[in-house]
Structures are given as structure tokens and as C-alpha cells.
Image 1 (cartoon, rainbow, N blue to C red):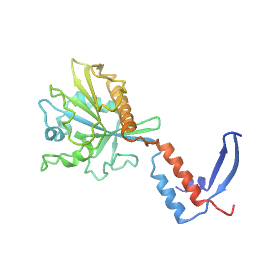
Image 2: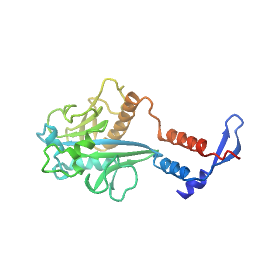
Image 3: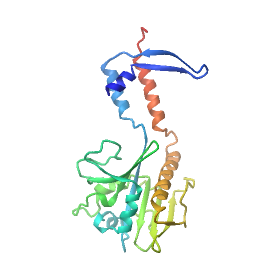
Image 4: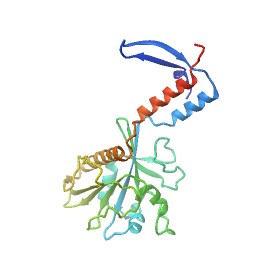
Length: 258
């Protein structure tokens, strides 16, 4: 924070045509300036994405059955796949983007996570969240899973997963994975009609165990971005949002006597 305050005491005005630095603009120190900088610090520098991971066990069909799954209900191949998507973070200790997962243990102790190339992805995994035996609808899980634009579904139920299984207004893109022969997985991709195809995975593809995690993660990220472009046409990358915020801070707090 102190380092950032020092940096933002001056704004460098860059003249792109002359390709030179013109002058520094000093800012007036004030409580309002520090509040604005605090707000700026809460804007993520990286693109942030949250994606649901849903495990469907043998014979399962309903939302209640699926949301009631715990980690011990899953298969070894499912757990291996999830570990390939990224790594696990400790929600109690982690200070980065968690997609609104709480640090107090109410949403689980850990969750899968991926970060790279200006991107942070948190996976809301159904089986990592505590199962409330007194709530057949699993509302606490549903409030996270049901509010994700992209769902990854690992389907061991031996029938096609219906896109409307998890009720709600989201789940705009759904990537279904079905185990086939040993080491091979079938892919089904559902997306709403407004969303253009994005890949790299498409309907009917068969993917090997080794290629599966990277291919699914990349497809899920692309699906999320395409969804944002359709439903949030004013969507801007965090870099642009931060630059706009810095410009507003400078305009608001510039030393007029300079």
C-alpha cells in the first residue's frame, strides 16, 4: 500500500506521438485519496473467472442427488482429472480471488485453482463443499454452483446429463465428460444459441486422459469469455478498468496549484 501511494503521487503523461515523457502531475494527499487507492487495490489486476465442477455418480439423475455428493463418493479418475486442472488452495489462508467462497470453512477447506498469463480461475467444486444432511436441496452449494456461467460435468451416470439439471439462470456453457474405454473420454458441449462456438473441444470428440484437463480448462475459459461478450457487451479487462480508475484518481486529486 505504501509503495503504491508513493507511485501514485505522480502521474506520467505520455505523449505517444512524440514518444516522450512530458511532465509529472503531483497529487494532493488526503483521506479521500487514500480511500480511492484502497478501492483501486480491490480491483483485480488479473482476469478472474469462476467455473463450476459437478460430479454425477452412477444412477444419479436429480439436482438433489448430484449436489449431495461428497469427495468420498467420487471415482479415482474424477479426482485425477480435477488435480490436473490446477492445484488446491487453502481457503483460510488464501488472500487472492476465491469467487466468493468463504474462508471460515462454510464453503469447504480447499478448492481447485489455476493461475497463469494474467488469469486467475477458481473452481467451485460441488464435492469440496460441505454437504448439509439436514437440507436435501443443498442451498449453500447451490448458491455457488447455480451462479456460474460455465459448468464442467463429470458424468458417470450412464445417461446424458440434461442442461437444465441444475436449475437457475446460469450454466450458459456446459462441458460434459463421459468415461468411455480405459484412458478415453467422450465430450459433449452445450451452449446457449447466442454463444458462438469456441473450442478447442467440440461435441463428439474423444480425448485421452493426459490431454483432458488442459483441454477442458481451456474450453471452459473460452466459453466463459464468449458468454461475457454476449451478455455483458460493456465487459472490460481488469487492466482497462484499473487504468480508468487511476485516471479518475488523478483527475480528482491533482494539485491544481502545480
